[in-house]
Amino acid sequence: MKYGGADCCGGYCRRVELPRGDGAVWGLTVSPLPLAFHRRLRERGIVAPRRPTRVARDSSGKPLRDHQGLAVLVPDAESGEYLTALDLYNQRVAALVLVEGLRADESLQFETALPHVDGDWLGYADGICEELERAGWSAGDVGLVCEHVFRVSNLLDDHVRESAGNFSPAAAT
Image (cartoon, helix red, strand yellow):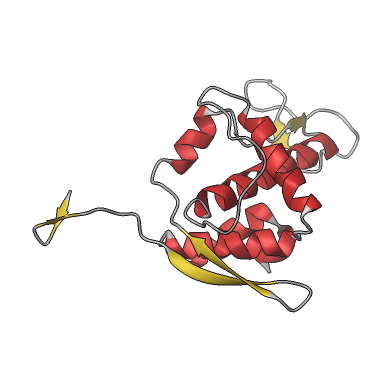
């Protein structure tokens, strides 16, 4: 691709600061997410859990039926299993956004081994989360770095706030 007659090379980065709890400030280099980031997540088995459904019931407890006599199903967003799976999915996506966004940073190195293309990406994301916890990172640290990655990726501010809610319910406010 060319812009103004010159080849587009991409590969731009931005230096950002991550304040630490002890008063130190880490300088990090963030890069934008690649265009195919979300497609790659799906290809590697990292998909949002399906919201479960339940049969809608009237005040006497009888199932509600539609005009064809079929039971009416309604979303069950209160399911504990679903909420746990959704939290785990959001945590994994945040970890992979963080790793991808920090790929150009030479000061930060992860010990968790990057899997092969068809490797265990769920295990990799879980390993990154465990590594971040051992290193003392907070949910706010992860959210802040992810927000910097979203900004350098040219996601709109509204999208940043909307997406932040997927990583941490507290970040959405």
